[in-house]
Length: 171
Image 1: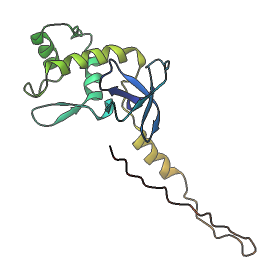
Image 2 (image 1 turned 30 degrees about the vertical axis):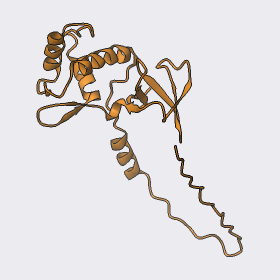
Image 3 (image 1 turned 120 degrees about the vertical axis):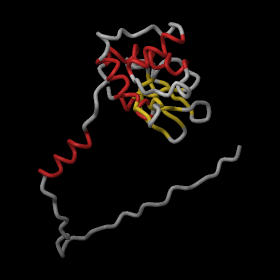
Image 4 (image 1 turned 45 degrees about the vertical axis):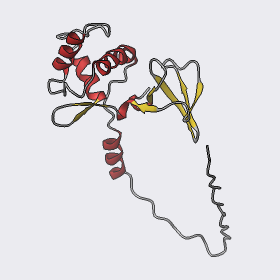
């Protein structure tokens, strides 16, 4: 499982795994792959974890980087419980991300962060994806194929693709 497949859904506890994308919503399952279900765009909002960041005084820090730092500092700084006091939660996040913005990061956000880490800890998803670098390096080694025109005696048929019908839904 990849970090980019994990979705937080408004109104639902926990995290879900993306199975398929439809025009009117998403098909999601539990993190273990069970209980596949459709969730409509009209009733829920979806937040992929790779798009979530923590505010800092200068900029933002991606959630994956925060999770990796939590994992690296787990021996020196044990993870607090999500039911700990507000001061303990802020102190803990201050040790993980020293420059986090104490005014814009709410205690409820820190609680979610701790709960999500506990859910994802055993799934081995805290890895940086180097897909972009791998694709760039692998494309350099593969010679580009040139497009050749068909032989003169060969009939080439063009397929017509009709435009999808655009509809306006009025509510």
